[in-house]
Length: 367
Image 1 (cartoon, rainbow, N blue to C red):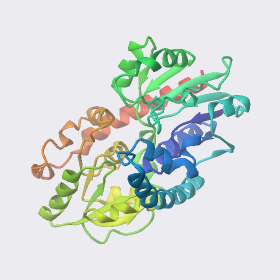
Image 2 (image 1 turned 180 degrees about the vertical axis):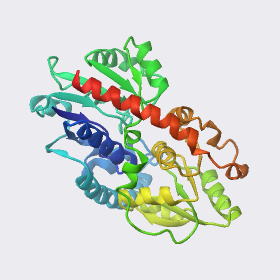
Image 3 (image 1 turned 135 degrees about the vertical axis):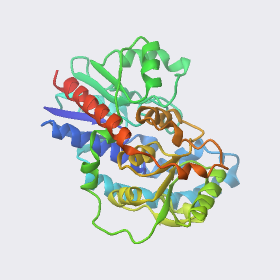
Image 4 (image 1 turned 180 degrees about the horizontal axis):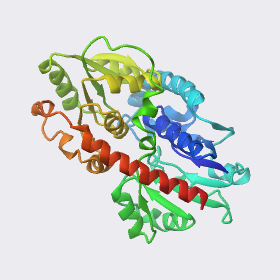
C-alpha cells in the first residue's frame, strides 16, 4: 500500500527531520510505500518565515525593534533553512508537489491508500498561534482511510474556541495513537479513543541509527550541549559542568548566533554528524525532547534540563524509560554526573515499547 503522511517536517530542526525519516523508514520496513506530504504553510515559506516569527516575538514592540530583528535574524534563519533543505532532500521521500494551504490539498489530493498524521506537535498551535486543520487531515475525504501515529497536542488542554473543531476532526480518524500520556488523556476528555505509543525515532533501533553515523574516530572527551530554549542559567550550568568534569564543552545548534554562547560551536552539522556528537559525548546536556530521546536511544549519559514550555514531552519519555531522576532539579546540582545511567533496564523497557508501538502502527495501516 501507499501511505501518505503529513507531519512537521519543514522546521530547521533536527528532531523534525529525524522523526519524519524514522516514520518513513518504519513504514517501508513493513513492505509499504511511504511518502511525506510536502506541506509548507504560507506563513512558513522562506520569504515569510522572519515576519511570522517576529509576529510572536518579544521584538515586535516598535519599528526600531522590528527592523533590528529582521536585519539580524533573517540571515540566521536563511542559513539554517538552506542546510536543512539539503538534509530533507537527502533523507526524505517527499511528494513531487508542494502545498501551502489545506484548501490546496483538498483540491489536489495526493494519491494514497492510507493517509496518516505523523508526530511532532502536529495538533499544537503553529507559528501564528493557530490550529492548522491540515494536520488533522481535514483535506482527506470521508471515504478515505485516515490514521494517526504518535500525534502530539503539545499541551494538556485545548482552547475553548478550537474544541469543537478538534473533536470533529479527530472523530474522522479510524485509529489514533498519541505520543504522550497527557495527550491520550486529553483525547479521552474530548470523547476520542487513543493509544499511547513511542515517538517515531524509537521505532528504529540503536543499531539502525548507528548504521547512518559517519565513520570517524573520537579524539577527545567532551560534554555536548544541545539547547533549544533561551536559558542563561542553563548556559552557565553547562560551562561549569564541563569545567568540573575537566572536559571540553561543545555546543551544537542550527542557528549560528549560538556561537556567542559557552562552548566550542558546531554550526548546523549534517543530521548524521549531529547524531555522532550525541553518541560519542561523555555527557550530554539538553532541553530538547528529541535530544532526550536520542540520548536514551543511543545510550549516552545525559542530564535533562526541562524547558519552560512543552516540558510534558520530556517528562513523558523519561517516565517511560524510568529516568525521571535525570531531570535537573537545581542549577547547583553537579553530583548528577556521579551516578551513571545503567542502560540495561532502560533498554529492556524501550525495546518492549518499540515492539508494541511498531505492531500497533503496522496493524492500523493494514487493517
